[in-house]
Image 1 (cartoon, helix red, strand yellow):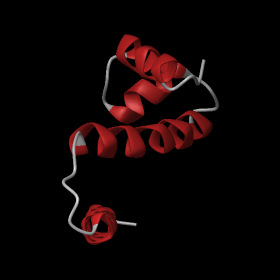
Image 2 (cartoon, one colour):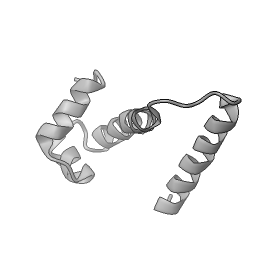
Image 3 (tube, helix red, strand yellow):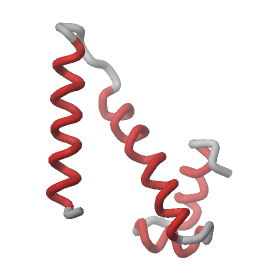
Image 4 (tube, helix red, strand yellow):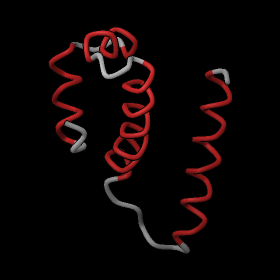
Length: 77
């Protein structure tokens, strides 16, 4: 799956989200999207890194301490 495919999926999901609001105003949309995408991304990367946080942080392009903080925020460690 290419980056364009992922962007298309996210765009379609957000469009559906706005349709489903039925006139209600969204709030905290940024946090909702980031948290919704972040957890499954972390789960998949950690699986492919076989639980190795250093390898996972390299895959993600983030500092290992940042990864550890995010894993804690999501109750994954």
